[in-house]
Image 1 (cartoon, helix red, strand yellow):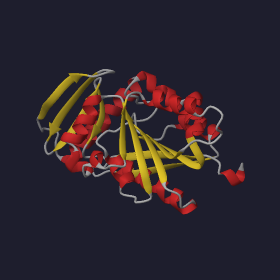
Image 2 (spheres, helix red, strand yellow):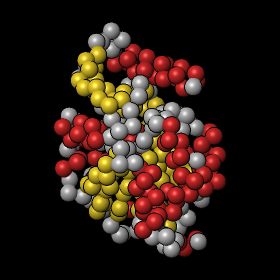
Image 3 (cartoon, rainbow, N blue to C red):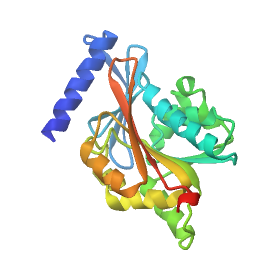
Image 4 (cartoon, rainbow, N blue to C red):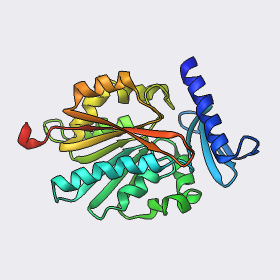
Length: 255
């Protein structure tokens, strides 16, 4: 916990220094008790931040790495087959990942699982000018509930089907497995969670995990569960790195 706290403090200080906000006053827009904890929406300068259970969760000034993760995965998927693409996302955030997925005409549907109704409301009413009003796209479907519940329901619906139905699964519920927004989210980074997500992918599908830094312990487990993995870094406009893993399910012709 101390390592995570110190990293958080340094990360936030670096962001504020880069944007010239060390002395910028924070305006609290809304503070509510959500389904899984306290959420605070705050404005700093011209940007917004969301704090979840006292932990920095998301901000409108970050998003390049989220978009890159989705874009890189979709480039690979579209090169491998011409069928319409289905995308599943765990975590809505500001809506940048959703925005990127919907910018691809080959994507026929995006389902986003978001546990907090307030985040959905903020993404629609406040973050719309940042995410190009992505929630209004008819291809977008919101599931207001737990991402794990959605994945388990997917498996229950097709228990005997060895192939899932999602081409891309984007996991953006946390800042990495060592910087969780909720303790229960550790499931997504463990063997059982990875097995569950892999089962929901079509052959040749990709699961992406956004994180704030390299996670070597998680990387080791991920490599045991998927046929191939890769790690990527992207520089955000704050000068801080945003990172993501791509994990590939074996294509059917290699099964």
